[in-house]
Length: 558
Image 1: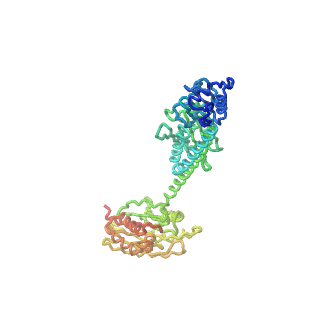
Image 2: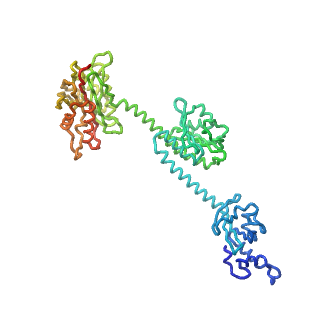
Image 3: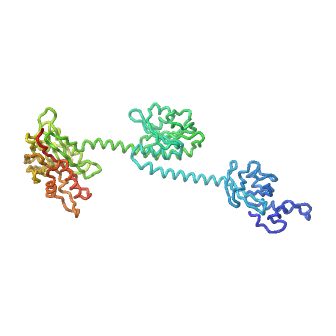
């Protein structure tokens, strides 16, 4: 209530010297009573706020009951800042502006108004509950914002180490002064950990044995994950030295929380606060568990992805084309582009089968095409390659291998796989020529690049494998002079649709024309050039698997 708003009567007016006169001059007509002072007291008591009225030198003249309850140490006749209340009555704060200040267990809102030259009124309001509600709302907003920011960062990577790193970097300093993620125990009874601290910018990491981890109360249970372990406050005296960063000092508060994964434990989160920091309360533990659930899910997903990727890499490695070594008098080069490029494997394949050491035989090159695309076709292609290697123990002639392979495919359980392929047995001569015994089974016949740039088509023909009981073969023999090339290719090259319109088939003639420009090139350059021309023709579209395998006579063996 603004005192200046009272009637401007000589007796009750509270401005300037009249206030001083009213508070100390008795009314002679009233028999010594002070009606002006009584009226002033009534006005002060009627204020909805605590009110402290001060005279010259900030000596308290009067205060109402509300002010007496809020600041019992303030009494009339003494300076307003005495009795330990000086922080509340700050004359340096701008007049008319409210400010909040702590006073014991209370939080008070204080405002100062001046009257005349030497009188002041201080208005006090208890906002403890209001401030508590505001602080709780702000704290909840901070926690919500923290969890919202944590989710995208934790799920941004499918690498276990990066997820663990994101977890500790997010936890410091919002949750603790130091944070450590201990990953589940590995097969060698060792586990790795990552740690971040507020005072160090560099991330720390290392390994620890299962025995050392068991020394930390609750950590072994959190790493085991079954049954789900609750969060656990630790006594700093029970903590081994490796759990805290060097130079951290005395830890006052420690918390171990499990990281729950997708049905499997994802590790544990260890949080540490300095001795002078706030302890971990129930509300903080709830937030930590919510954060740990997000971190555990991200780490578990990354671990599963890495395990699947490693398994996929092992399985895929057996289906990829082999490295082509340099043979005496022969140079080889190959290229394989799967339609599903992300998988790296498909139904097209090529291989080089060498005779076992000490056994007679000739190197055998093969390029084939299994019906279908992707992983299923790649598995069938792998089976065909393995069947060929097994059959080579019994037979090395291409024209006799084809019927055996056909019988093997027909004996396979449903669904039946259909295969086209071309086989070539290599034999080098003293003159540097390479003779190839060719057998073709339903596959495009190889092309021969002669030294003068002419391109010929081999005369070998044959029927599809895996469809008919009896195979029909027309074998052929090709003689390559030094520098000449025999090109095996799949129909993904010639049947590729693209070009300027995007709807035109590449065709056999374009492949022959392209091959004719490769005369005199090393065999690896021939394959690279043809692959690039095919890729340019496709103009970025993905259609069928594409395979190339080139055999070149290298010249006389020195």
